[in-house]
Image (cartoon, rainbow, N blue to C red; front, side, top):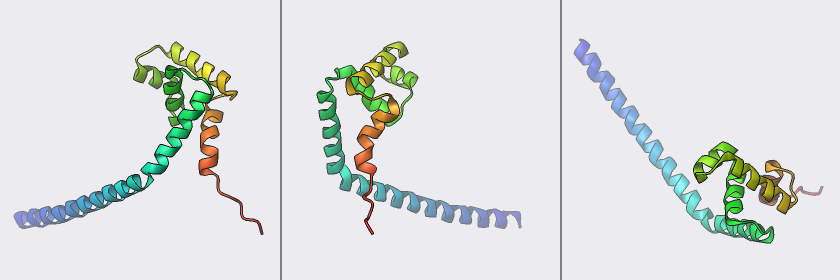
Length: 124
């Protein structure tokens, strides 16, 4: 009897795994479609961000740090990724804020995200 029960459980688990595999594949396909559809838009946004960094006269290192700040990385994480001292990253962040005229990380992110994420308010 126990053997029959184990066979039933294994059969059920195989079906469940097959359903999860199918859902995972569908999720991957959905992400790939989204990613492919938005590649052009993403590149245009990235080009715009790069041009703003040029307009602010950021150094190559400051550009790297600025992108990582916008992505939400912590100072320590940025230092580890860039294989530099956290003190260096903090100095580069200060330079970014001074050159851009922004007060900090939140304003830096908002500077680029505001137009992208804002939705027009319909007039009634």
